[in-house]
Every structure is written in C-alpha cells, then in structure tokens.
Amino acid sequence: MRCLSCHRLSWRVICADCHARLFVPTTTRRKVGTLEVVSLFKYKNIEPFLLTKHTPAGYRLYRYFSKAFFKPFLDDFASHIDMPVTLLAIDEQVTHGYAHTALLSHYAKSHKIIPAHTALLAQNRVHYAGKSLQFRLEHPRDFRYTGEAGIEVILIDDIITTGVTLQEAQQELERHGVEVLFALTLADARD
Image (cartoon, rainbow, N blue to C red):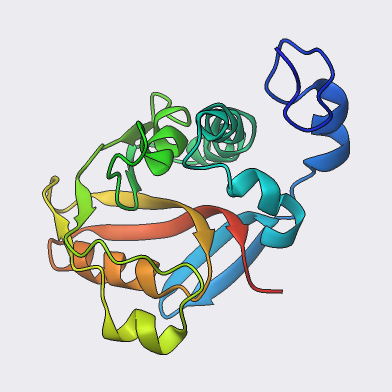
C-alpha cells in the first residue's frame, strides 16, 4: 500500500511523516444559532482529501480521519462525562458504496460514545456544494429522526459551510426531546 499523500510505501493510508507534517488539527469553534460547532481543520488545509469522499480512496481516508482525530477528541470528551452519549451522523445515505458520515461516527465509538446509525436521514436529496445560502434556505434537507427520544447527542458531519444543515438537524432533534450537546466536523469552510 502507498501513502495517499506522498505515495511512498506505507502500511497506513497516510504515512507517519505525512500525518505529522500535514495533519495537525487547528481546532476551531463557532456558534451557529444555539449550536456550538467544533471543527478540527480548516477546509483549505485538507480540501484534496475531503474531495475523495465518494471514491474508494475516500473510504480509507474517512476511516483514517475518524480513528486519528474524531476518536481521540471524543475519548477526551467521554473522560469528563458519566453517562453514555449518542453520536448522530448527518444523513448516512449510502453513496458510491458507503456513507462517509457513517464511517466518521462508526470508528469514533467507545463505551461512552455510541453511534445510532441511520437515525437522522434527509428526505430531500438536494446537493448543496457550491450553492448560496439563499438556495440552502429555500431547499431544506427535511430531516426525519427515528431514534430514541429524550437523549443527549453529538452531531457528526464532514464539513460545515453555512451551518444551515446542522441547524435544521438540531431543530428536528429538538422536536423529539433530543438535546444536541455540540456538533463535530472535520473541517470548517469559513476562512
């Protein structure tokens, strides 16, 4: 196997040198309405890797991102809580063989961080990439939640751009008595 960054031989999808050089988290926090969103990277710093999400290489990369960055972050969070928390990935619809958000939540699980797969799905399959805020507001995702009511959750997504999707998900969850503690994303597209 080869490192997907430098293409040298490596047992890992990203070799140790590239991991240390290229993937240093620059954790940011921003408030979107009442929701706190934690992002581990700036979009521009990992854009080529994020754009692989619907490819075979993307499967390996998103699994790597989850294990290398989401899991340690969530393990640290879990060390400060007593009760388990549910991970809800934004829209785990399978595209091109897998759901990239499902990978992020699945490989970040622990005894206190428990994924609830396919519990929050969009009914509207609109694509927001490259679209304006106005377009996003006029074409909501129309989320449906089928999970347990009255629980605490952490929302998971790959990228935050405007935050409209995360806010819409939060509103749907609140209708079911679900408290969203915060959202965790790989990258923030805002500069």
